[in-house]
Image (cartoon, rainbow, N blue to C red; front, side):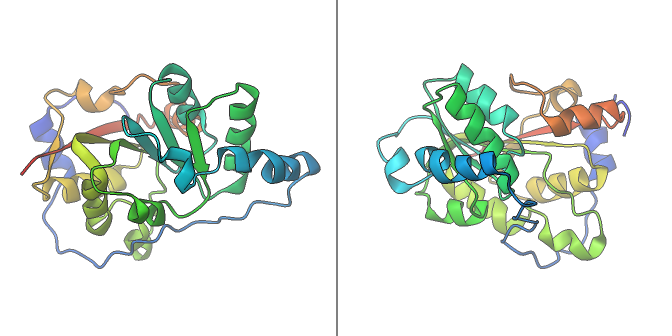
Length: 240
């Protein structure tokens, strides 16, 4: 996508156009099963994963900062956040078993205590959460579903934005990263039509530079290597 050097006003004009809404689906789509697991991966799944698996008991005593990453990939960002923010609890949902196994292995090796992991549908997990439960939601490089007939499968749609709003605390944030122009267009279109969120953006660096400290994930490195500079979007829940 190349370098982006324009203002918030130009950014909105470039990426957001009025159009009719299409029906959207709330379920996440994607291949959940990995290739056949080797013996080591099977052992991690059987013996280590239960130690870090998300469950009601896992976070029932935590009532402070809870952050949720939807689709954590191989877990680089989630692991970094947990290591550097030990006063917070982090939940990660990733349907790809290989990604979950990779994170479980790293979490166990580093003896991280403040991560809970799930391979369940993230939207189903949101539906089980209480109102005003999360401080932040991370959605980093979600599948853009580029074909038009698949746009209804995109994670960020009006139905799910409603769910995000319900579970976020007052002034809670949704932090999004994508290198796909069409998806960025769609994300802004939906959020800017929703008066329950404020887009935190005053200057171009607010969306061209990562707004939170973190390591680079595999997907972020790939985007930058291919000269598809990511766009970072931050939306804050408003109190209406």
